[in-house]
Length: 289
Length: 188
Image (cartoon, rainbow over the protein chains, first blue to last red):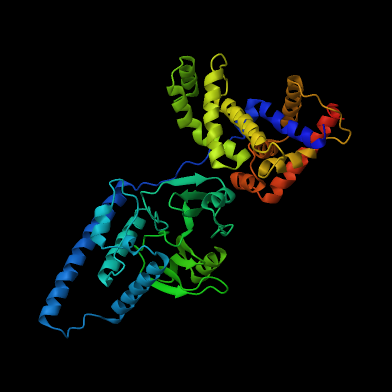
């Protein structure tokens, strides 16, 4: 019997060791993590939904009124133009990153009608949204944030798709069938979790020391939604990464950024994070492939 | 459902025992099998074989630690499956790497070991002694690597250690085991 066979015998004998050592080293596979909203946030979101529907209706009526009474009324101002430009960029980028246009971002009322009773934190607004719509949605998101629920924007891409938690990046890559390179840590994160959605999306979640999600990175086939939430951002911009993806759409509020989506080499990517500055967001995007 | 209640279902020959076991430990057992086989299909097969074998051995066996009992069965079945799949040679995945690493534990003056059951039992006794002699962290890493088949990266992820720390700990543990095996005169 050579060393190799003896080593294999040793490996088999490990299956007969005292059960206390087996239990001690047992790590329960992580359960699927779905965070339901609390009652206050649900109410806030319902109010926001109602506000969006109301404002959308008002704008439609206003548009009809303005069209009928005067063709020369200019309803835009500089701020509004900037917002609409941002919304237009959003539109372009989403249509680039999400090839299934039928499954993109429909009217706000439809999205809210589709919201399930369980009320997970997903706010979908019209990509063609006006200033008022964006503002209302932002206010809703801020209200939710005030309630302590939305440190980072929620980003469940499709609630009907099951997520399977896995234990390591190797296992995730094995399930996904594609390479997925992600940063070791983001913004001082202390833990990474890995999940695979049955529609082909691989996901790495970064948690801080208290277990709160601070960043999520997703990769999937180009024809699958990796992201559907464009709820709460007042600005958007396209950036290019040196020796990396071009036309990366980043969105955020004020001087900070919370979302990046892009397509590269036949795959779609999305990063959602707590508010970070431009350099940090660029570094995260550059580290993902 | 508590383990003791599931075990009672086995004793009552109630097939709900299998469903309850699957509900409570299915993911765990699949993950153990996957650590050895690195194939989801084969892992599911081993998981199902585990239920079948458990059904056949309880009764008369009454496990004290049910999940460890199941883990042992799954691991042994997974290694059997691995042998079956790679009859000609060890093949790919973590198992050949584990064996290669464990070769370091085998003292140079190797005696011909016997293949009988008592030999395996004696080895398990030495392994128990070895495991009791190392630190808890080192023991967990050793078990994750050689019982559950985790890669170094996976162990580092699970426990939040650096990869180099895991590698160093495993290397030291193998050296300790080699010394103990030599001292026991098992191979030397």
